[in-house]
Length: 261
Image (tube, rainbow, N blue to C red; front, side, top):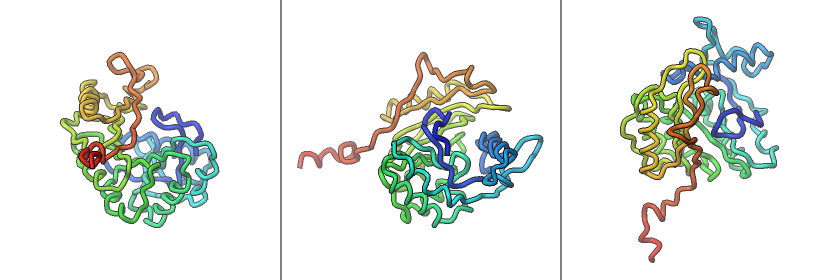
């Protein structure tokens, strides 16, 4: 677990699962693959055997490891913080048993002092098991959407019982067109960074931002990306965008007549 994450939209990371499988183009240059390989070479057994070398680069090989000893880590942190769950994997990977997912949710439910952010590229599984999970207020559920081919992931997210739902539109590899933002509380957008980073058109980001503003969805612009993301920065049209989601009040937004009763 990292106490001080370099990810712009969170404060810490917690990884009860290690290893993953490439599932769509957004995974091609995933930073976690490179980092897992580095951690393995540093002697960390948790990441041993989770990657293979292909074309001189580390790639996930489908090995997924459950770290039972890590389950209680968030409970030991007294001061509340925002925690990205499984920055080095996907909690809803098919290789992660439902019982282990439930154990992770039990920890998040108990550790009420924290806000937990879960991100997946497998929202169909989230929707399938949603009724078997307890969804506390401090658990935010998000999906990654890198191009228009994967916009349907947002529909699957809407089928879950998460109280706060968010989108990670990064690495943004193409225009997303008109989005259905019904029930979505937050959208993060950003370009790809690191070696072989693919370019991002500024107008793709502007379209997302404008749609968020029109629908009252919090918008966060993470980065322009590229080989040197620090140099490229994260200023969009003269300012940074660091909005955070607020709890949706369905009874005021959807049924205002109830307040008059």
